[in-house]
Image 1: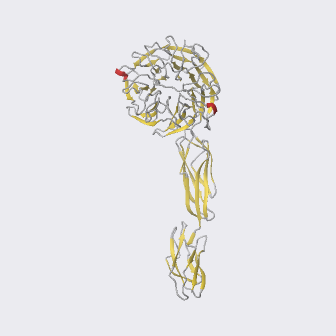
Image 2: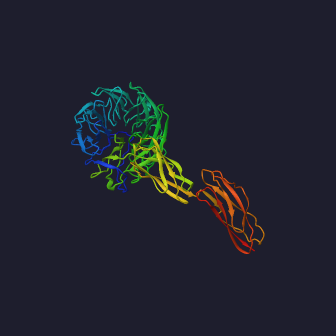
Image 3: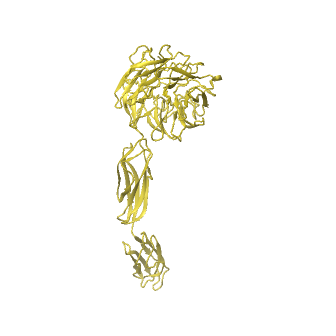
Length: 602
């Protein structure tokens, strides 16, 4: 089989990876590297036994399909892989989009080819690997099952075929778990296929009970559609892509907790005028009524491009997915990325594949991610890995984020041996439980109280009160440090403050111009400041030398944080340099406060 050559008039373009870029790898774990041409194009599922299950589009024991007809495999969280079944074409060939686990504990999926009519099959497989072909498509009821299945609330399975049906544009079908199939809708029922054609993705059942999906092609502009279909088969085209906001959606939709649908296109968007579609693709949001908003347009480069798979809605409320091309290590070729995007459209590239020598960390993820019960993300790549570039199964760590507000605290002037307090907010903006092991402060700073326990749930906040108690005058610098399970641990908040005396007299020195002996100068003004939060009492002001107080606003007490002024004159009694001092005695701990006075008699 020439891989994907079966997709007649398909909207998909696959580019063979030839890059060998090297870069420092992020924290990714390769659980398994496939050792034959069986790289997985299908998303994993985590079953009720805690293990992961998936399919490979090629490979396996059979020689009926050249490089193999594909497999079903199980892999433990530790990376031990077991091939449960090798397809031989008679029971199906080339399973493309993975499995679902039904309420009866068995797994169900589709194959592109094989079966009685070589038009693909629907199969059931037990956790032990016993496979039963439930239905062989014959073209009239569908052909080329590229998508996965969904089990609806009525217990039946619903799915799509890419081709076949009454008009050749693919189908939506319902099937019981024992194999009784009903075709609900055949695409291209309307002139020029304005109802869509080529559904390459499966369906989701939304909270309203209806099913929603995408078609790769057709629609009013020929660039694909988003549709709704009732359990009874009544189809409504909600949106036709026109290229500007995306084109050719290969993946299905998800419905987020906000009630809206989110999906991706492999082409179109702001960078749609590109050779082939290596610069293209979008992430979009759509309301249940069909109002579509383009959240992000991919562009060839480090940010990734060509998202072939769907999104997942993680426990942190953000969306996560993969791109087939781009990334830091081959911005103009095939490597691919893992990314996160908020429901508002802020996208961050979390990992670029081929970060390790010879792409042993994988390349070209055609499938999306799942978030497992341990909170981490798991997925597959269709290329890369060791030793044969046949793809991988990988684990990517949860995106654990801690948001500290503010990131720096300035206490300003604080009286020596008194305390100022500020509050720092700690928010768990990651996707799993935040586990705090310690909160410490340095220098003259101390954690006075906190509402943070050892764990902070996703989306929750806690508070830390930090106090500053200077022991000497001058600037003080320190940090508030959090040690936790986040990847960027420890996190720090920069702390600063200035230790000051309880009361100050400024300026701390005054110089007068030359003054004729026996005459009096104009006054110089000095200021007494009370930096305390209590009144300054028992104030007594005096001078020495040829200096005298002319007027003052100071009384025997000064209110908290208050100031008063003292005017001092110079009357030299002899020629030459004359010195003296203004002295204030009071209730402050640093009493007396003084200012040195200097003048010249002439």
